[in-house]
Length: 135
Image 1 (cartoon, rainbow, N blue to C red):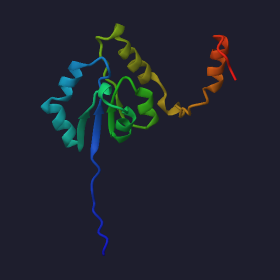
Image 2 (image 1 turned 90 degrees about the horizontal axis):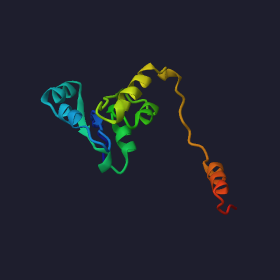
Image 3 (image 1 turned 60 degrees about the vertical axis):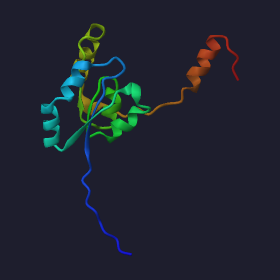
Image 4 (image 1 turned 180 degrees about the horizontal axis):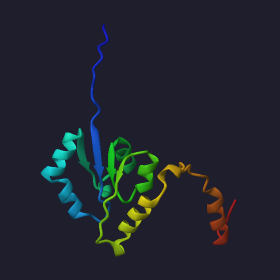
């Protein structure tokens, strides 16, 4: 039985999420013929997934070649993915624009990976503070 190599080009995916609040204007724009054509010319295939319907956004972030999110900016940057931030200016005093401006001003080359620590000491402290029994 012989081995044959198949050259399969990896599909590039653009991951766009609007979060739990919805962002109809972004949904409509991503769904236009012009955007789809531009993505296709670059070899990308759009994938729109609303976070509320996904059991794990991390899998989508890892699979994407380009990401457009506001809720998961630092997770996206930690994965080294290109990021497009589109602020929904109708939400809570335009806080997303503030976040986008802050990230734009950051020296992203100075970011260091976040390694989750052990939260046990903090949990024990809170339990003791609240008067719960501790071991």
